[in-house]
Length: 315
Image 1 (cartoon, rainbow, N blue to C red):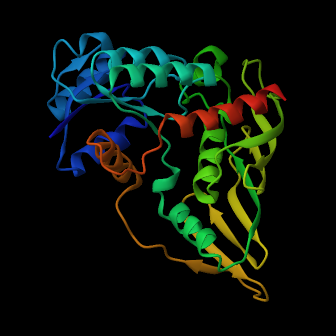
Image 2: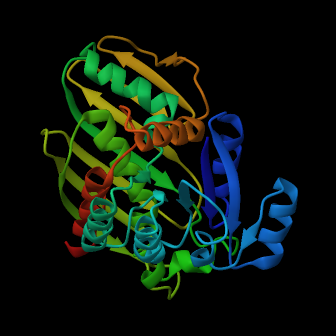
């Protein structure tokens, strides 16, 4: 049995809790959050102890692994603390605010001998797995280009305020959703780095993070990509892969369609049904902990994503 603590009980924590409940080898043994009424209510519901300070966990509860759902600016200190405490760490994406912080996290993992992984979930959605299968099969010819358009109301009052402060979030919509875009790109195409050109700005308010961006990237495998983010209204989330012999289209992570050369209509594909993406993710993390072959993204992979995002900001 692998005993887990979850630090940070925001929106994504419910996905992790549901996944842990489905995995017979996993047990949730502790929760931590600064919001005591919230974490107390959840702890009573799940019948596990709660903490207000994550540093109190190792001395109070025996755990093997921790899932960190914290502001991005806290990923480095929290990861280092748990790794040095002899605990395996799964960090919610993005890995950290900077590539240098990623380096420090990886150094702590190397020194401790414990596992550090990053919860880049894109590879565990069935539509992305199907897109990768098509790319690898060559049935549409050679992949040439990728485009992604995503718009969302990024500044809704319901979004925790730390997301819109550069110190805690590292950036705005590019840091948050760009991490997903580059993860999808790297996973499906097999790329490991990108040369990035971008324009980022905020035309809506005085928050110190960007609200929209256009990114042009050339992957190290020759594929070109354009990614457009708008944080001012929720309108579209479409992804296209263009090949020498056709194209595939994704509606976010919900559906995938294919069109071959000469065809007039898109054909919807039904990928093989599998486990929930977060269940797959944590299951792969458990394999990683045990030293088994695993698909969970490691530090090197996740650092490359942060480097691409940093280049977008610095261009």
